[in-house]
Amino acid sequence: MKDVTNYKSINKLLLKWFNINKRLFPWRVDRSPYKTWLSEIILQQTRVEQGLPYYERFIKAFPNIQLLANAQEQEILKLWQGLGYYSRARNLHFTAKLLVEKHLGTFPSSFEELIKLKGIGNYTAAAILSINFDKPYAVLDGNVYRVLSRVFNESMPINEKGAEKYYQHLADQLLDKKSPGDFNEAMMELGASICIPKKPQCEVCPINKFCLAYFMGTQQELPKKINKNIISNRTINYLFIHSDKGLFLKFRAERDIWKGLYDFPEIIDDKTGKNSMANNQFSNFPIISSINHKLTHRNLIINFHEISINTAKSKNILKVLNLENIEFIDFKNLKEYPLPKPIEIFLEEYLHNTKM
Image (tube, rainbow, N blue to C red; front, side, top):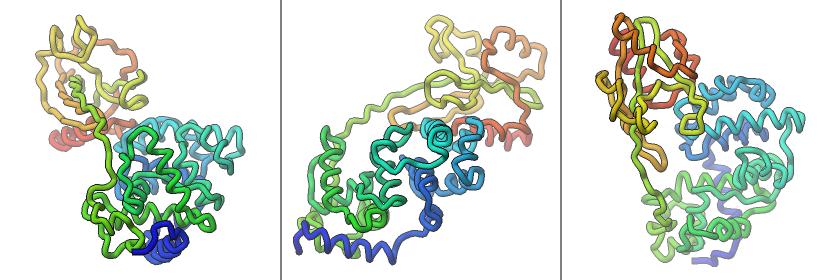
């Protein structure tokens, strides 16, 4: 095994491998700060296979930052529907408007200015600067953490206090300052295709002879991570109120999950004010579907109670509902409204079964 600190040799081998094996994503074929930024925001917490169709839809709808800035938030959230972490979409829109208003639609070329923008942190700023401005900033994402921990056989948990600063120092040391953009993408590509979390393909890794973990046989144990996730459960009881022509949707204006999207009115406990079936006048309406939906730190148990307003008896229910932020939507216009994934799944199944 050769010396892991032989950074020049590592850089040369990794860049040669990347030049031959890199995947031709659309943001790599036609480069611009706007396209790099858009791809990086979409791919946060998202696999490339899932994020790629979203990127293509966004570029088709908003081929430049001016069009994105001029769009309505509801239009952006609708395109984002199903991708999750909707604050990313709202930050995307906010920053687009700011860049158009304050920077003539161009991206700042300094790290200090970039990280002031909403939704852009150290990683995204480093990606934009290295890939589009050829500046020597090393990226640090999940794939890069994994490569670094194995190359240096580093046992420091990647989510420990101080870990980001420590691993950033390792990334900065290893960075090829002559080709920072390609090198950063090579590190991410290596982590995504070769140095994968389980069963890494060490035998075909272009830099395996410099990898301490491969030499020590510890690659399966790295990177280490402290389990900090506390998963809580939350039950939501929705009122699916509809006629033959349409349904009632509620705009989520409050600061909570799915802010800015549309869902159904909820059954709220008359005494506690919480989403609950206890002591509630709507509790006798039947549950026609239940969905378990997992978020990062929460499991959602979602029940859908059906209220058909085709009968005179059921129409009386509307008189006791709080109709603030609630509107009646024709079924044929549903595609215009951004919906949380569980609502989308429920409605697709219901409309398919009822042939509406």
